[in-house]
Image (cartoon, rainbow, N blue to C red; front, top):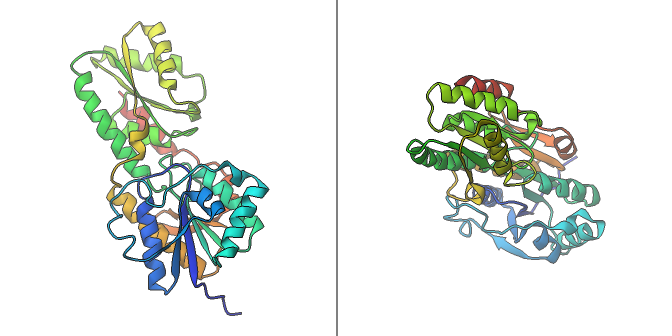
Length: 328
């Protein structure tokens, strides 16, 4: 049977923005143009999809956005997509505008909305993983992760300069939600004395205090501890207070916050976004749907959305061991 010819594809960015989203949109638009496919931009993510906020895109409309952080299409966290009625509005927009394929760029919450939508509508859907948390199963790295790592490391390098001048403990909180991929990568890259993340469990204060005691005995003036935010940002303050109660050492806490979500995407994120965006267009042309496009071991791979959402992404045990070994 001859595969149906797709004449247009819509693209949206949803959830938390991440550096490299614009590069992915650019790749989708220009890949579509190369195949003679019209690309339709949907503003403000799922909110714009439900409310019919669409705009035609062409290669010129995505010129000079490759190096920009954020997303020029805009984004949103739209709770109505969790409801059947909300998704009916999204489907109506797709039907009304004759959209034949949809590329959705975002993180875990975005994937959940896409999976539900894919079950209820006939329009083929491909997801492109973009989140600084790097917590999506089916891809080694997500768009935005590398930039966030570099941003955090740059900030910690500056903090280290002042830390060496006035001895005390420094707790640096990074993003990552319920996972420690960002914290672990940053910890290794900045030479942290300890890295704390949710996957460690709750019994870590005694171990941390022992580690810091050893660091201080070896002559370190201002040990740096990288802390993943966990479910509630600001948790580094509570950890620092517990450590001070045990060791009696003064501390400072720096929550890096939203600086990690902004900034010019790194070359690595731009290339990854370009590859995944182009692959998403190719997947729709080939008739694929309901899957995530990712890169695993330098190869483009497709994972069913249901599988990507069910399987938690595992921490790299070799990196965990490396971080522990180097923190001496």
